[in-house]
Length: 313
Image (tube, rainbow, N blue to C red):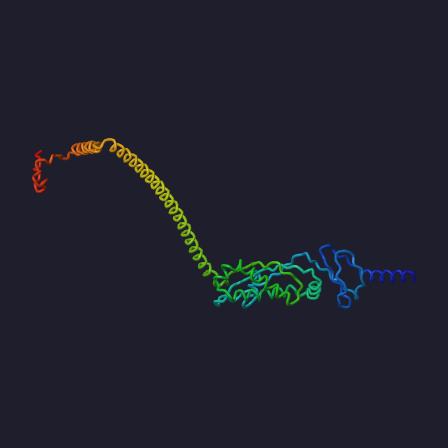
């Protein structure tokens, strides 16, 4: 009888201990009593009513979870018909698109309650909603744009829309990132698309080389233009300095001549004849012909109709 009492006591104690739960530092707990939420304890020891009355769901709120959606190259060949993750683009082509969704459970009370209530279907719901958002993105673009820019554009386009859908479904999660895992044309036309991609790559390479050459020539033209501009500035400044020097010299000579004329009225005639002698001497030195015109003077002055007889050599 005593043994039976001890066994009964141990069974009751064990049953009561089912109401004790340890919540770890990275966890939040949701306590439901007969299905209704009665508490959301944080890290520490929680003492409640035993199993069957209270249910304690511990949720890791600081753990990043992943769910794969869309095209999966490893399983696509096992599924007959159109594989999952093959989307129709805006120009009526097909593209295989697979991606990974990173999410975490939100720590607000409402989101915790929603996640605990739907945690068994959160991954499936997120995958389906992500695929629906990706289908909208692909439908608004041509196949070339989808293949070339999908890895960069799709995550930024899908992430906020997926968060809106998750909030509308009350999944209680925060979508942190969407990353593209697979992006390629269907296997039946992959070779043709690769040829087109190679051709487009060649075109972009040629365009890049042309832009580089144009930029190099522009820099050369700018350098040559700068050189000519500097030479023109130097030449201009030199001419201006020479002109100012000539003008100053001329004004100095003019002032000296005026002073000389005031002192001696015949001084200018002497200077003029001296300069004429220099001029005539220069003409003779260059083989020129200089003869007096006295023989051609008549009563009416110089007779220009008479010409000098060429000198014999």
